[in-house]
Image (cartoon, rainbow, N blue to C red; front, top):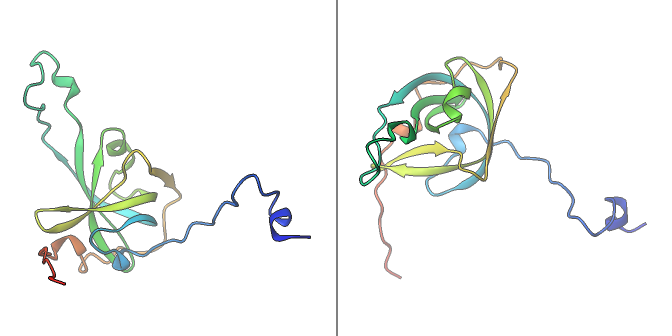
Length: 146
């Protein structure tokens, strides 16, 4: 039996098991991370309507919250948008699928865009290592001449 037949035919690629990343392994400019994190805190960011948007539609301003999330290896600021804000409440445990690192004012922020998913799961047993906050590390873009 060939390996394609063993995996249920060759017309569909086999689903890969997600490789879970730990917070301390996150690096600037990377994406496709799957991690289980606990929410430490969530701070709503005051919504501002986009310039040029009609003043009659203030409800269209995006809801954004900066959430400190982490695992037993470290913590990072997660930018929650719109419906994500409801899932990321303090003490909640979530799985972030296809998360990416955005840079904001030289520091890392974790985010999940429309290609990713956030799942609420059972409370995790680990304690978040808040003294290793990766969002407090400031990065500087350096162009390397070849």
